Length: 127
Image (tube, rainbow, N blue to C red):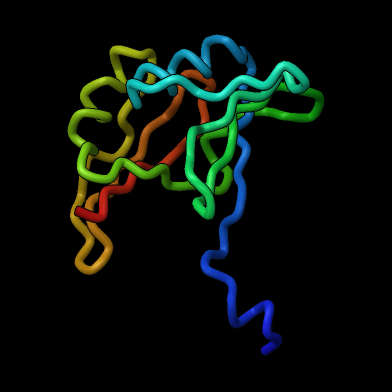
């Protein structure tokens, strides 16, 4: 194992959630998390989930070759201390709860949703 491998703090460093309708998808995530995403003028087809370094983040993106899918890799988004509030907003924002909140010992609470684009995503609350 190299020094770089020993000092890695997480396997995930960045993620992208594809959107067929970028404005609708961005509005969905801003609504369920009740917080604005970061929009960069140089990257109009990208909206970044807010985070603090050295935290992990990602974005909603729209572009060539990007297709939403309910069957792809599932990433879990952090809902620390507020999974119930986030789940309560999913259907109102146009999404669907596909796996209700479950408790996994030593992991916390998890649920899975479909966003407005048809992507399957997980929600995680370690509390």
